[in-house]
Length: 607
Image 1 (cartoon, rainbow, N blue to C red):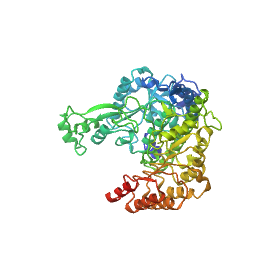
Image 2: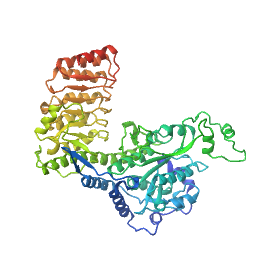
Image 3: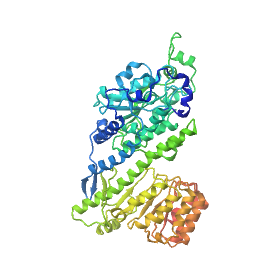
């Protein structure tokens, strides 16, 4: 996607063709389709959503949970919740989805523009391949280089993709590409198309990104584990947005995260050797030829073992222990704060406002879905026990749906490392489910905590949750205050809270945490483990925590405090160590801080 959108109109004024299409002409490109295109597309998205992972050529795994040693199928529960969530997104469409048939694309010989009239409305039988890319000539207002290198990469990449997914009929393959599929000559229609990106991504089966054919990009492609690792792509806000929308919505839709990149991958690429003359000599290119950028760049590679090669690579954030080459994308949409679209590079800050708005819309749907999913997980487990005639602890039952967690285990010993066998037996004797409310990496912000509160307050959750995992999120001081004052005191069985890797927490978050214990409502908390690693705390935060531990009578049940990897020095850790001795029985975890070996040994000794 071009990252100079708000300058596009001025740049392209001189390029507009005289036969500019009107609004009505754009929407009537394919006369075979009904006039109510938007409603048709929305219905198509829901139909494809119900088909689930069929595009992946993988066996569908029924979603199940394990309750007291027995598997309970909750596939339909998850399906209903997913449809409800995606219907909210479908309301965002303001322009019809225009696509190019693959066979037509291959006959063009170049990357087409919207004014060429080669697109048609999407059909229910289409397998849409979403082309996500950065424009290679943004100043000239064109996505490809002068040699058509990107066009060729897309042709070859799509061929490889269809070979990998052999169950797809090539005649049903269509491409969505911004330069052709979003109106380029009418500013109003262009903005409507941009606003509809979320629906276009939801309608697509795949994303394909062509990797720029230059040595630095080729070398980075070898080790890339996610789209953000691609050179001249992953740092751009518009490119990040397309990645973000596709991956988040496809997780909500319970479909495989099939994000591919295609291009030259070679680890011996020499980015310093880019002189065309030298490169041409090495590649034995005749002086009468006019080599493409791809030919020039790849001739600069000083490699072994047969030279560079083009590959199709599956890229999903957090996939990658094997370079992202898992068989299908099932890892989930995972984005740290600095990987979010609104944190990317833009040419105009006006672009960032548009990007942030779309990002927030998608994230709200994604977070709410994750919260309701986990709540419904508890409801389903409680209902399964009730049907077996087992006693459960509940003050009511809700019908909300929940997230695809395959074969989660309930009623068994927790893997959190906190609960002991005796505690586990106690949970079972009291009819408790002993479950983890897991929102790790779900982009939960402070403003989402109120919604989370409503889910945690339900009877099947508040009496049965023993671990609340909010790690790897975006919770700050206000969210912590709400959690400790208005949420945690109502969770009667909670013994562990994980707030690790919330970089927005910091000193203000610790102040809010300490202040919340001045409220009488927190006196009922029975936390045994509090995890605060990777939260950008520092020595000042350590001092606040130490003072609270020494002077407060609250949370005497606490047995483990994890403050690792917080840039604490000896002074801060010393204060915490003294406080833990005052408390008695409180163990500190301080790994990863900037402390001396002597201080590290001291903490181990007192623990």
